[in-house]
Image (cartoon, rainbow, N blue to C red):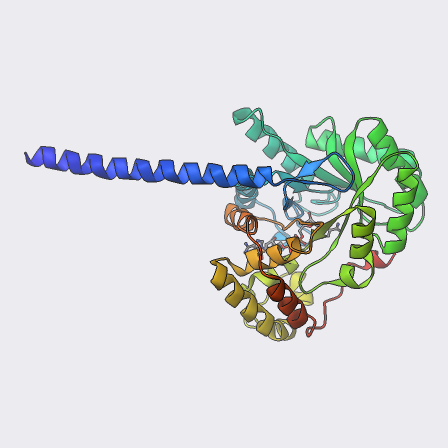
Length: 368
Ligand SMILES: NC(=O)c1ccc[n+]([C@@H]2O[C@H](COP(=O)([O-])OP(=O)(O)OC[C@H]3O[C@@H](n4cnc5c(N)ncnc54)[C@H](OP(=O)(O)O)[C@@H]3O)[C@@H](O)[C@H]2O)c1
């Protein structure tokens, strides 16, 4: 009798757990399908991507991230970030040939890692549809359209892919831009990429690139720029308005201000490494009123500050943020930025609170 009681109690616990797990899986699947369903077209191209992508700069990097060291633990965490993104339905990944540069001690190229993560995952899930974006480094000694194709082929080799979804010029060249734009067009015509974009382009450069490509019938799909609640230069320098006017998607990099807008860094606990020089205790002190309000707004929606600041960007329309995730938890949190929207009043209130803080200095290539 006692035995029966124990075993039926066990059965009950097990079946409750199973039911819970089945419910969990069903709701996870539903959330994943919903994120996938809400894909957006990248500019005038045929490429459709999730409303939020994942940045892979920190994967394998030892020059800016990871306290200048890369190890097995960080590798496992990065792979878990990739898998968690896919599990949440986020399938758009941004990398670059210079991430995890071979000139940096102990680094592993981010494209190589992303390619490996995709292949591993495809073994389990052959139907997996991932959109890969990578970038051409406009180094001063690279000249002419052929340099774009040569670099792209090297990227494809590291990624282990025969084509990528989006190929971007990482920054404007000091010279040789016309050739680079021709190279982007050649890449499309040779079937090596589905869509092309630029990054760190000013309004003037954006218009020129758009015009040159459209003559060949190729749309400029995107401009990837620094854009967050505390770095709103694209709203002020005409880049956002021009993207909207020409039908170019603005891909927002550093959308959570390299972790600072998540609220985890405080004047007593500033970020370490190069980030510490940008986000100083003094800056973090000035940021606190904004962070407090972001948290209050998030609490009303049962959302975290990270999810609020990403939602704020998506609410600007024609903006796809690409936050960087170092581990599964960070990637999972990003998915919660989708499927809801803060109010117009809250959007304006946060912008006006943010405008009281002097912005940090951006990436100098934006001024090229
Ligand atoms: N085109 C360009 O010139 C350019 C320039 C910069 C970046 N990008 C692209 O944009 C992507 C994103 O930008 P980013 O990496 O500079 O900055 P970001 O996305 O604003 O910040 C990423 C960092 O924030 C922290 N973080 C992430 N999720 C978090 C969470 N849920 N809670 C707390 N902390 C979290 C992590 O660092 P910690 O955990 O160490 O705090 C992570 O590495 C890059 O990966 C890259 O693909 C492009």
